Length: 242
Image (cartoon, rainbow, N blue to C red; front, side, top):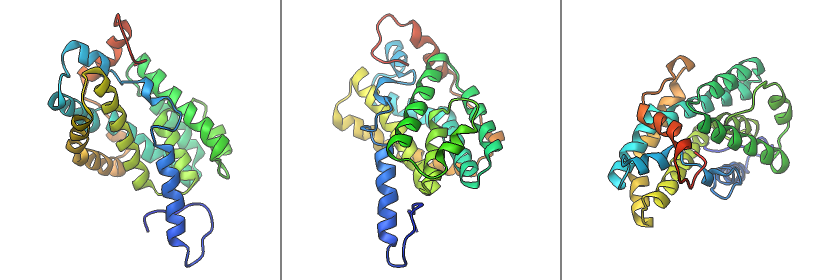
């Protein structure tokens, strides 16, 4: 069984249940879902201006590092643990995960990026896609939910299975990075898709690592990307908010 929802289904309704969960997941992680992802580059804007990212090869290398050794893996791990805590009703653990995830962000602009998207995701989910118990779970968190935690909590409360949620989240994350780079370098549509193809295995590997990772396994080694997110706020001309 790939997909289920929190709606009761009969013995012959498995396909319908899977379709409902897939529909929600594709909606939440679509570029059309209004969380403002198009406004952020996660430091890529500075990396392009500095000459670190100039073409498809350098972009793919940069994003591969961010996925496996930087914010991609960390966000994926936080999503996994938030999902499991929300699913199990472990509100104390969820609050601690939310606090740690908020503290793990390396720069002020990245903090703005992930908290703004997290807040927007929660607000829209509650208004249009609310689920039983979602309000109560959110209420126990003493800190604003960063984006990966927000996605994990909402998916858990809708009973959308963890593995496809995680894979979809990472695909959306990479797609947004590539979309920003396509405007900055710039890249054509075909080259953008070639980068996405190159990162397919990296997305799967990062998702698999995150599913097995403990919170003690969290860590980042993408110093240049972290510096890019810090230096972005001093750029003279900027298209993006991070």
